[in-house]
Image 1 (cartoon, helix red, strand yellow):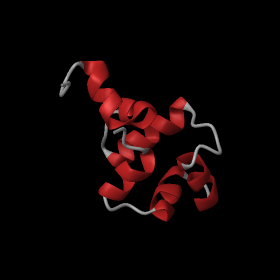
Image 2: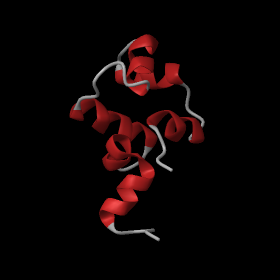
Image 3: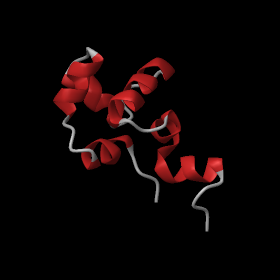
Image 4: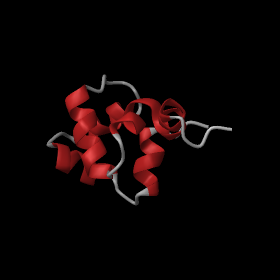
Length: 75
């Protein structure tokens, strides 16, 4: 199952308000990014990946898909 941006953030114990503050956007804007109501730019995805300390591929493709693209953890 692919992990969403929301689940990756939640697993790290980071709140939406913290993410919004770090990105310099409103909480509503960040929430819309997580829910797919706003398009996520590469630059914003890069910032998010740095804050969450995950590869940028995980932001765009989810954790499972990123592993499959690199050939790791495939069954």
